[in-house]
Amino acid sequence: MKIKAHQLIESIEFKKLVRTRWTVSFVLLFFLFLNYYGFILIIALKKEWITQKLGNFGNYGLYAGASVILFSWLLTFLYVFWANRYYDQEVEVLKSKLESENR
Image 1 (cartoon, rainbow, N blue to C red):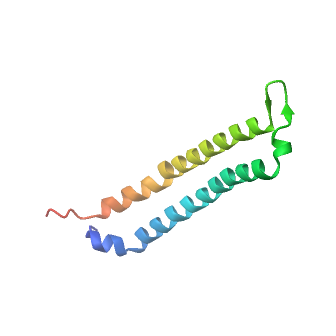
Image 2 (image 1 turned 135 degrees about the vertical axis):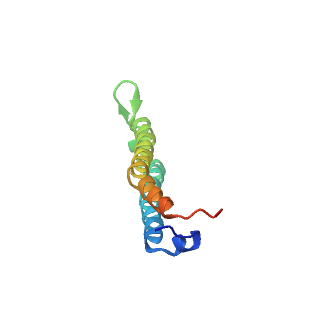
Image 3 (image 1 turned 45 degrees about the vertical axis):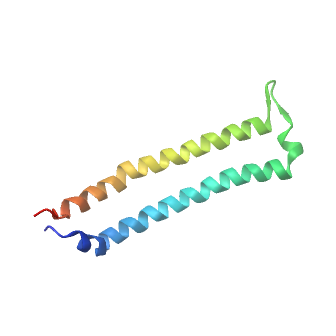
């Protein structure tokens, strides 16, 4: 059954898809902020820990900074995986229900 754009926007499926996307985005954003601001707080509050040597070539701060970058990559990967696996499929289903406006 083909529907018009305003009907699609008001549908339960569309609203559920939008709500799910916002939920996933805010959960990942929460972890991203926790990651970045946690790192900044550690630098501000535990300076003596951050500057301790770890191995021959670095200190805890160097490895913590690298882990912040790697964790943000992981969050990006999780979002892309979710979007490709679930979100894009649901968008295609909704697009297939949409009647062409040019008719």
